[in-house]
Image (cartoon, rainbow, N blue to C red; front, side, top):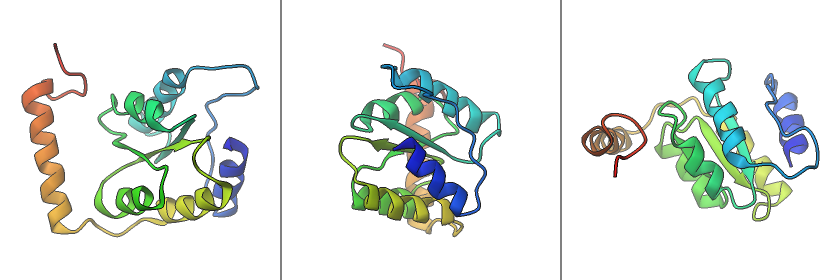
Length: 144
């Protein structure tokens, strides 16, 4: 899946920074969420793509980075909404739940996004930031 997405992005004219995995050995998605999130935060990458079995674990881990605002893009509606209603800079794919053709369609839209968000979505995202500031001290990790 990673190879296919990388090839597609290169064909669309994007430079690809590959932060892993580099072999077939079992690996842990938090390690890659950390690497991708750090690349986005440090502005080494404009956007990121994470892959795990369902897309959910990678999304949860990447969400710890304020600048990444990940979207779990395992269905067409999720890809459309992430693209048109959020400032998501990181997509999390589920290798077990998203087919090749769906990935290609989703990636083309995600990487082509350049239109501003509608006012209602800007308003809603501001409310999410307010919740984050109130309950998480401005960071992504809630204190128990």
